Image (cartoon, rainbow, N blue to C red; front, top):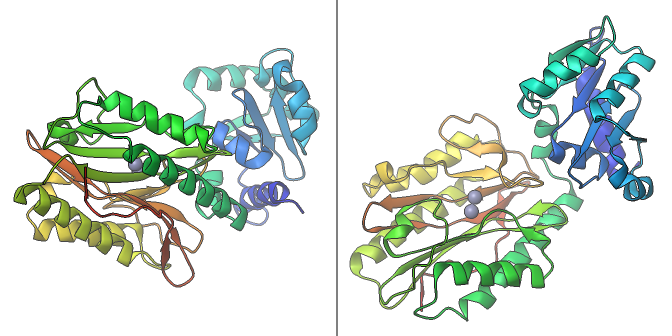
Length: 363
Ligand code: ZN
Ligand code: ZN
């Protein structure tokens, strides 16, 4: 059985598993493109999948006909009209009644249209998170892809760092990072590359601007690569000159929190416990109120997936999960520090996949 077949089988098992004689649904309509890709390998922009207890149907439009005919290994339907019409056709032909859908990935308009198209006696039922839950644990092949993505990302960072000079704009650096990423095999950045200098580092999600690097600027770079669909994510800090004691102290506190977070990662602990480990260190340094986001997130086919490494997430970590550990502290009109690695949960602990040094680089 191929990996894609195994994934589809797992969805079928999950669907059947309401109770043994009362399945959750007769089929699951998959409309999240990341979930469609996970089940079929389709990487385009217009596709739906319908998983029934015995088959998986994939629907796309004629623009993808050739590519799909060469790559899709489940039942392929090239729809001339709206994909939902074709889905409704299969529901009717197979006499399916209870159709599960992904409530996070079907908007109200699509839901209404689909409802109108379904044959009499068929109904729609929200079934959230089936595939997202399966996706949290990565297969060895997926872990290999993430490793590659991480390597390319770090290579692009290292090559760009050597080119950074006073007077460069934040957006020059972002462009160089993106260019180096693609040059080394990424299909695109995993998200809009964040480059922030000086007081702008206090904005956790700063967009690069025309600000030119000055002496004594703190520099934050948060970047990720997307390679064969798989994401990486890393944040590093640098300083233009010799950091003041206050900057160094802030940096060291965040680094200590990041290392404590990594130290807590192992199978059997909850995401919330990992968050608490990092947060506790920042609290000790009086910086917990400056830590305005969660400690990390899962990543894979999407840059943000489950589990969320936050205060309230009770997800128990398992070997094969890939998460980020990225505490930060942000001080208005002064600056902010975040340090982020991509981390694999292993059988006895974890492996930091990101090879880049966390040393506070002075440029
Ligand atoms: Zn990041
Ligand atoms: Zn991240």
